[in-house]
Image 1 (cartoon, rainbow over the protein chains, first blue to last red):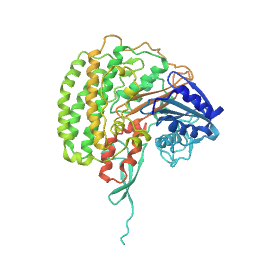
Image 2: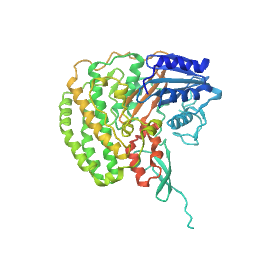
Image 3: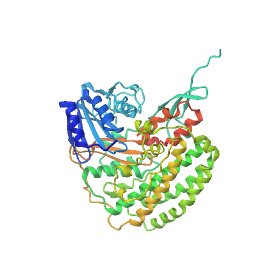
Image 4: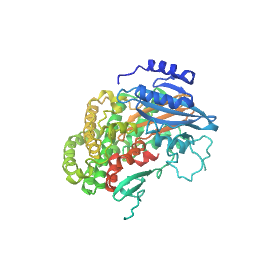
Length: 148
Length: 366
């Protein structure tokens, strides 16, 4: 696959996704900020049409009223990169699972579920991975009380 | 008709071949593994939560304890991430010393890999030879940082101490002895017939599956994928060095061993070049006493650690502590393929597979 042009890719994705997609960038990444309901479709498109075959990292941030999911994608061997973000409200902390797109999402999503308490729709095995099963709460949430 | 049923064998968490607290539940049908379930978290200490209550410099020692077998690499990754957020340029001398230390860490980690693989497969002598040579690297670390295993030598903006006068001769003598060490491993470990029989064709991972599962580092290169962050996305001054990427072809346990042996040779090449070019000068950039990256700034920075892609994702809120810090641990992600590569193999093979995936539990459990 030839090296893709990031600007062209973003224009095409904007046409495809309409107002569900906002774009931004910093010194290191182009950001695709997507509505949670369109996230799975965008990810499939990025993998199948733009060659982002390597999901390097996925993680979450607690912003109080909302959770943000961040995905860092790369392509091997083209070496393109892009970051995708999506926000879900704190009271409905659920996003689509990406296990069907990249198998590597499996444990990484379980980790987010375990520590941050976001559930992933369609994940085959949504159980804790690092903490014991009987643990209560999700430690990376900002409202988690540390015992002294 | 004789009735048979599947049964479960628990490997670990307290077992030498699991390299720390790893627990694998192997579901067996006779002698063959049907499935293996990995249980993590025995050394989980919630490093990411701890980071939120420490200032940026205070977190440096915690990163050393992630991958304690190559402790310079995770600290390097963390310091570079914070430097990226602050826009700090590290002095040249510090950059070169960092590369020397990082590559020695890689060699130390790979030496432990080779030695522990040998002892996991029953060859105790192999471990002793590798530890003998790793010991000299530990001495080098002690010379510079005062610490052998968990050095915490990198600082945000540079390194903690300049190298002493005795350091460079010691490095040169190590480099001079290195080809002989490799020769010994080749004869004693790589050339061992039993070891070859235990590793060849075992734990085969193909390239597509490896990328699909996010496997990185030597494990990915053993599948024949030419991908190394030092080349693909160079950080620090890695674009100045000449080195090759050793590749495997089959992606089996045997290739994972050979790739690491060859990688040590390449690391020595990098160290030689870094020694040649090592300039005089400062070892630490001017960094504010209280580090406060701008509110809303966030960085994902990744380095090629001895295990694979080690990434840090940091979000700042304008305070002196990170708002959120995430560690993308290569050991954690690499371990995900253990059930995939062990399926249909025998119980003895899963031991070899764990050893050749080279997980460090301090890093995977965080």
